[in-house]
Structures are given as C-alpha cells and as structure tokens.
Length: 197
Image (tube, rainbow, N blue to C red; front, side, top):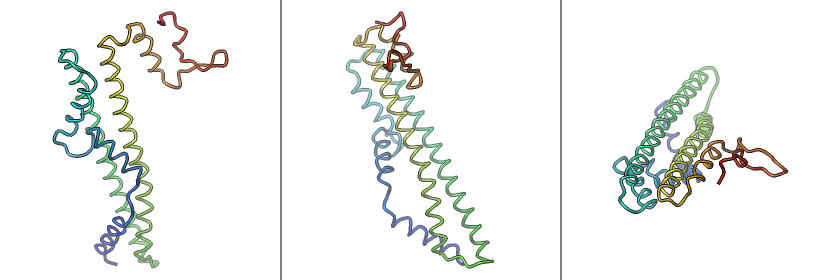
C-alpha cells in the first residue's frame, strides 16, 4: 500500500467535506476581533477600533486604558495561536500514529484505503470538537475583555457612581455560582451588603 497515495486521497476527502458552519462563525468572529487572521495590524487594528468606539476624547487615562486593552488582546491572540499550534500538532501526530498502526495491521489482515479514510475522518471529527472549544473560549475571553474595557471606560467618564462600582465588581466576580436563594428569589450574594448604593 502506497503511503503517499493514501495521504493524497485523504486530502481529497477532507477537501470534499463541507466546512463546519459553527467553526466558520467562530473563525469570522476571531478575525473580526483581530485574534485570528493576518498578523500585521489585525489585532492592533481591532483593538484601536474597539477603543475608539468605546470612548471619545484624548485624555491620558483613556490612552492608558487603550494600551492596556491592546496588550491584553495581544496576550489573548498569543495564547490562542500557541494553543491552536498545539492542537494541530496533536491532531497530526495522532492521525499519523493511527495510520501507522493501520498499515501494520494491514500486514495481517486486509485494510482498504476507504477504511483508513473513514478512520481519519472519525479522528478529525473528534479533534474538531476540541478546536470548537478552543475558539469558543477565545471568543468568550475577547468578549469579557471588551465588556470590562467598556465598563471601565464608562466608569471613568463618570457614568457609573463610585458606590455602584465597588459593589458590582465583587458580585460579578462571584459569577453564577455566587448566587443565593432568599425568599424564593435568586439574588446575587452581595445584594444585601451594607455598602450597596
């Protein structure tokens, strides 16, 4: 059995498969946010657009916030690309390992190229779910960063009172697990604190 012919037929099979719509949406979101796509100015351009949309005026505080936002977005981008590289490497290594095992088994029992193609498709579908999780968590990280940046920007403009800021942050940090039931209603843990506005 020719390994190069099998790899060529596997590539043709993968090209024929329609792209996963969920992955396409996630890819489009990551490109729009500047996390995926071309390196040159992609992330910086998206960060600049988001920071310009979030605030007006050239105050020094805003400049610091913008650079902080850009730095954190660049960090998300770097982590995403590192994890994506690890994912692709693991997928390729595992696929190669399985194909080598199948070739060894083909010495004792016949294995058709179609069976190998099917096995590779199964492997890629399993790894595809990992890729979706990676991209979803990256999109969530960008949305959280943007939300925090917009909240900080509006707070610095005086649109949010100081008391609301001090009580909202711990409640948000507690997340859904930090909610308690009181009188049949679900309320944030910090709702009955003395320092509420």
